Image (tube, rainbow, N blue to C red; front, side, top):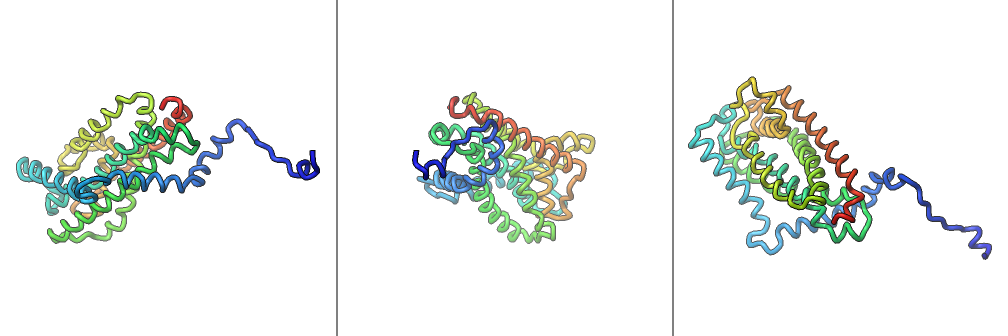
Length: 281
């Protein structure tokens, strides 16, 4: 053995639990992979489509039209204060579509990236989190429609609009927890992917999207608030409509607590099953 080899040894350190302790640091180290996967998802979403990004306009706009006709014109449900029914519906539709988009895309992301996961090490949490960028792009496009509706109906937001990013963040956090849990379950039980669209479709109608949450009897308000999207949707409407749509304080607090419980539960479930992904896929 030469002197130089003796003075400059190289060791491979294997230490139990080292990967777990450095997991969150690895998320930052692999940030470039996050952006690569996010851009891939954006490109795939609108590749070989006839109208491309315009789908982000068409889907929420047509849903708003249907809800306005069915709930506002036919069922004649009340709006929030003096706000136009179409604006109220669209203000509730934005957070719900953000939630549903993240839940649908992130839950199937692990199975969709099976080739990458089975060959390369990286924190698997990057894969479902990268789908958030697509949902945010669709959300920003939908905001343009909302701005147009508000301009058309002469709705001027108050100072509450400055707090809109807070409720955007809450909508994302609310979706990430269930999405991570679903992504982990879907790796083992592939037929679970058929349940996700069903859940989002049912949730669209039981959440106050096409109608005002104020029509729910007062004695049922707290129970209704166990759906964390209720408080988030109310918060969106409060930011956009101001005093016409006040937030129900106790219900909102309950929704926020449930959101963070779901987030903790989703991350914990994902991390517990993450090591087996490569074998199961």
